[in-house]
Amino acid sequence: MTRVGVVGTGGWGKNHVRVLNEIKSLAAICDANKERSDTFSKNFNVPGYTSLETMLKAEELDAVTICTPASTHFSMASQTLDAGVHTFVEKPMTTTVKDGERLIEAAKKANRTLTVGFIERFNPPITGLKQMISEGKMGEPILFEFHRENKRGENISDVGIVKDASVHDIDTACWLFGEVPKVVYARVGALLVPLEHEDFATILLGFSGQKTAFLVTNWMTPNRVRTLSAVFIGGVVDVDFVTQQTSIHEGPVTTVATRLYQEPLMLELKGFVKAVEEKRQPLVTGTDGLNVTKVAEAVLASSSSGAPIHLG
Ligand SMILES: NC(=O)c1ccc[n+]([C@@H]2O[C@H](COP(=O)([O-])OP(=O)(O)OC[C@H]3O[C@@H](n4cnc5c(N)ncnc54)[C@H](O)[C@@H]3O)[C@@H](O)[C@H]2O)c1
Image (cartoon, rainbow, N blue to C red; front, side, top):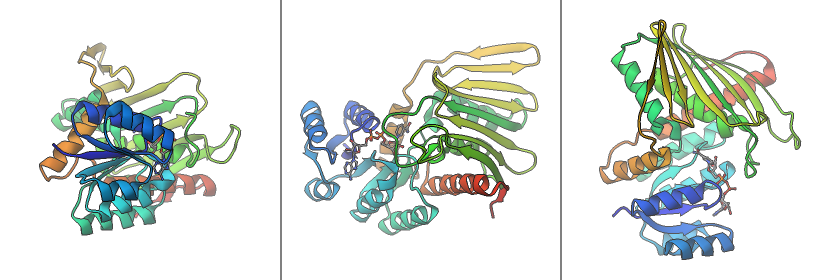
């Protein structure tokens, strides 16, 4: 059994705890909030800690998943890698490019896996779309248009919508195109109180040739919208990330792909544990996490300057 500890059992971390318990890999939990730590420790019958340092010293863990706020990711992941523990860090990997580079170095030095919670890669319709692209039946994709809109979650306060939410679609666009963008143009802004961070972002990513991704993200739309429309030379594929439905439009014909609903987090964490057990690269690498942070920083820089940012 691969022994995994979860740090942070809040709104999202509680799902890591549930899934890792289901796949019999949950070994310990840690939350700075004593009440939460006690509750999860009791409910899942595993040791509970309020400090990561104490958990790492007391438990012989193979791996840790980090589900604490974004601003803590760098220090948490540095500690786990330094302790020789394979590390899954929720998105964004780090809030700055510099910290991302340091984390990749730390993983290399420790010879341990570093992966990031870009869960949409594990969402079955996205896996299916990646497969369609590699089979080339519809020709090359030329445009991905993403919509990720909803009311702001209660818990997010340390980063804005670009580093919290747009990062999912930035990663998916890079993964589906198989490259990082060459140019970034964006307009972001803050409309909701408190105005500490941006809460809407409209982003244009230019890839090689004429390949483009257009990302619309906001915390204003009252209902939860998470969609992707992929335009190919030979047709259009519409994906709903929530219902997991895929509609394929070729000429006048629309086909709706039916597949069984599968929980993306279950697929993601099973994939992480398997990569650790088989001592191989996970689907999402530290470099992928760093590239997404680079693009997110370019998004913010483009919006402040009003100019496109060319990535070297
Ligand atoms: N992949 C996804 O779809 C997805 C969805 C939601 C959130 N997330 C990510 O998960 C992470 C957590 O988000 P959340 O919504 O659960 O936040 P949250 O505020 O609900 O939970 C964070 C938890 O971390 C604990 N914590 C904070 N500092 C700590 C420390 N130093 N040591 C131990 N515990 C500490 C808090 O007590 C809290 O229980 C973020 O990185 C977020 O971006 C990912």
